[in-house]
Each structure stands twice: as structure tokens, then as C-alpha cells.
Amino acid sequence: MFLTNQDVIELTGWRRKLHSMPELSGEEVETAGEVRRALAATKPDALVEGLGGHGLAAVYAGREPGPTVMFRAELDGLAIEEISDLPYRSTRPGRGHQCGHDGHMTTLMALARGLSRQRPARGRVILMFQPAEENGAGAAAVVADPDYRSIKPDFVFAYHNMPGIPLGHVALVEGPFTCASRGMRIGLSGRTAHASMPETGTSPLPAVLQIVPALARLGSASLPDPQFAMTTVTHVEVGERVFGVAPGNAEIWVTLRTLTDRRMEELRLEAESLVHVAAARTGLAAEIEYDNVFADCRNDATAVGLLQRALEDEGIGHDAGDLPLRGSEDFGGFGKDGTHLAMFLLGAGTGRPHLHNPDYDFPDDLIAIGARIFNRVLRNMLG
Image (cartoon, rainbow, N blue to C red; front, top):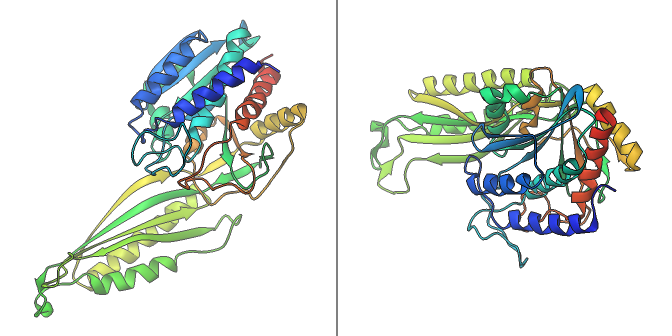
């Protein structure tokens, strides 16, 4: 075991410190600072900061040339009010680490401790602490950052903790892992009128009543069919909250979800077309914006094989589980340039709150398990 009992005690305390200080996507200033201070004690050969915002990457070089292997964790928390009586509960109102990114960061810090004591024989190890995963912007911003070129990996690995899977059990599959998704914000503009004379205005309500069910009908197939598509209307607002004015504007929010990026482009065009047709039919102007855009995430066969070998070497059970997931994860952005990529789910136990529940807390036992898996991967690959 490359971690001592004292390491585990200290890392558990550090994870709980991170848990108490969550920051939202793009705002991870204090979290990045805390990571920077902890990494300094492991004496990396280089530290690249400001990647894609507040991201940072520690570099540990081997003695001989070889591949560059990256392990990734996320810096950001969620806009969730934590409900718990934990002594280390969030100190930030309306902010929480209910996705477990505090645990993912701690797993990489465990790996950093091991690397501080034994560098790889060859190649390089990159520990990437990525910003803005929760809104889908972070991985793309990191990859687009000019400073990323100097650390661009040949292989990249990550995991996500997952309640509902037995503690420490792994779900891993080659091919599609998580879905592409995007938030579509539809604005409809007409003309208000006095509520006693609605015929003198142009109400968006008829168009809303056409668009919402039409969006739902765009869904098709089911996972793992490549034609899988899903639409979820998450918000509808028509007019103002008054009784004397007939509405002149409306807003519809909908999440588009597909298994592949190619299917997402088809779904996007279908959704935009029906919006514009309905708006034109009822004399409205329509505007469409997108947010929280996630690419699909596909596990590369070579990278999956390396993970499977590490799991077997460590005696950790694994299967395909319920993969691929309908949810999204921006990790796929690291593989769009041909980098070998693989992600797995690490069971957080059954009978627990789910991810994004206000009382979810990352199990500390996963720190050492996740670090063992990553350490075995890098030692198998780089010695």
C-alpha cells in the first residue's frame, strides 16, 4: 500500500475541509488556492496554473522518456443548500459539494503523495484539477488554453463516485459512457395588451402550448441505442405576475439529451425548427440561446483495457453496471483530439442519498480505493 495510515487520516481531514468550502463553476479561487498549497508539499516538477479559468495541473516527471498520463478531478461545487449535521458541513449558504468533487480532488492528492515519494520510471504524470465541470464549460476551456499544449496527455483517466453501487465496486464499459446534453433557452416576444382587450396584443401563450408538447415528441429510442434522444422541459414562464396585463413574452427552458454528439446536432436542429415555425405561425419573434453544453463521453478501448488490468491487479470487482448513463460529464472533452480516455464509476454504497441530494456526502473510504486504482494504472504504464 503506497499510502500510510497517517496519510489516510490527513487526507480525510483535507477532504472534509474542502467539503466545507464549496465554490461554484468558474468561481473556484479559494479551492484552487487550497489545492496549490497541498500540492506544494509533494514537490511537483512543474505546476501549471490558470488553466481554463482556475484550473491547475501538477507535473511529475519520470527519469526516462515515455507517455504522458493524466488523472483528472473537478474543483467546483453546486448551488445546493446542504442539509446535514456534519461538523464539516458547508459554510457557504446555498453552496454544497453534493456531487463528491471534494473526494475526487482528495484522491488525486493521495496520488500526489505517492508520486512525491516515488516518481515514475519513465514518461510524465499530470494531476489535473479542472474548473467548471458542473456547467459543462471546464474541460473545453482547459483544452483550448494555450498552456495545455505543454502537458497534453496521451492517456487521461477519471472516475465519479456513484451511490447505488456497492462500496468500492467499479462500473466500466468501452464506448459510450455518458450522454451529450445542452440547455436550450427559448425566448418568445409578442406584444402586451390590457387584460380586458387581449385581442389588441400578441400573446405567446398559443405558441407555448404548441412548443412544449412538440418538444416532448422529439424524444426517441432508449439507451444504448445510438438514436437515443430525450427532451426535458425544466421551466416555463409566460408574462408577468399581474392580473391587468395580457402577456407579451414567454420563456421556455428545455434540456436536450442524446447518446452521441452527432445525434445532438440533429436534435438541436429539429428543436430549433419547431420553435421558429410555431413563432412565425403566431406572429412572434423567437430567440434561442444555449447553456450548460456537454459533449458526449466515450471510453477508448485501449484506455479501458489499462483500467481493467489495474482493477484485476488490485482485486477490485468490476462490471458494465448500468452504463451508459443518461447524465452528462464534461470529461469527454479531453478525448475529442484523439487522446485515449476512460472514466469509471466507483461505488459509494447502497442505501445512501443520491448525487445532488442536499444530504449527500462523499464516503471517505473511497479516497484510498480510488487512489489505489490510479496508482496501479500509472505504475503498470510508467513503472
